[in-house]
Length: 202
Image 1 (cartoon, rainbow, N blue to C red):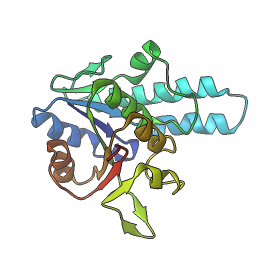
Image 2 (cartoon, helix red, strand yellow):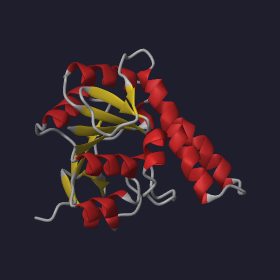
Image 3 (spheres, rainbow, N blue to C red):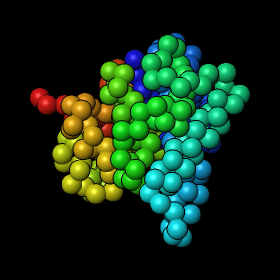
């Protein structure tokens, strides 16, 4: 099984990507990003008067809104379970309400939530976003250790992901979701352009 995080930055093309993913007939749990929906929560939080707990659940609900956006017109079903048969779109709020183990922090976004679902289901993790992968000094990294990533500060993944990958002894792959063949290749386990984040002990 594969967990595929589809970032909110891909909203303009995400449903077409999802149709192509579903046509592969693989077992893929799609975890939606928060995108513009989560940005509204960030704006409200920045204005003050909103607790970390409230902001966390509002942001997770923003992911759920994006889930319904992805499902609309794609015929890909929604699910409140983390085991996928065929292609399914996760309902993060429904899932996390049953197992509230992740920190309530802006360091933990849909990236780490997707990693948590992958760890819980024994799945591979692929993140599709609007860039080719992780860059350092303008150069795309084909591979980077989670430890090194942790020291890089802000990248195309959230700040908690590297630590989570190390703790769970797992890897992740970041790929450009605007290039559908790369995403499909990553799902099939083929070598393609992107960045492998290495959290497994070797």
